Length: 278
Image 1 (tube, helix red, strand yellow):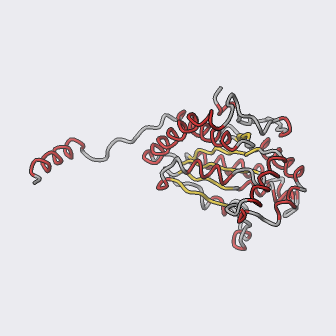
Image 2 (cartoon, one colour):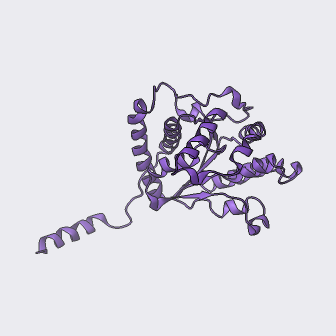
């Protein structure tokens, strides 16, 4: 079965995260066993992104959401490591600025959606406005409850403008999150990631779970699907995300555009220049 089908949230599904195993790793025994397949999909992703960039008829938007330490940065490193930096970029969404708060919640998002030919990865996204805004009561329920339909309409408009949208929720267990927090404490190269809020936010685990379940259930559409990725195993997370992006881009049958110049004329000029070169 294609990963596009295995991990996609079908429209109308009532998502229950407790029923989905974050330690799932398909038939692989471990990272070493999957290394060859991971590299194959990295190569395919590199080629397909080049096609997307050359074709310039579509753009690609990848949204990454996860609880703290869920692996967004690691996934971005894996995906970008397979792409030409000339045709891709990353946008991280932090606490809204004063100017952003003076506009509707989608204003800051629409400004950074990808241009044609470009792949953009959102590290967090517009979904924060139905996640953290809901959990911490940053806006009334009467406000955030309307945002699901607004998000669906926003994404539908992007798709009509030839943007491909793939949304990934990196699903980790509470125990794995605590282990990763411990790794940050012990590794000087990761200590900069530590936040005062890390352990405080764990107290809202059930609230975040409920918020994610509603967002995943209400905002996974045929045109802008959500995928729930088992993410306790970092290597499987990377494989699954890369494979889904590849499977989707392959289904589009992208091709290189025709040349914009007379190839035969250029070829003759080349041979003539070569013939007369010292």
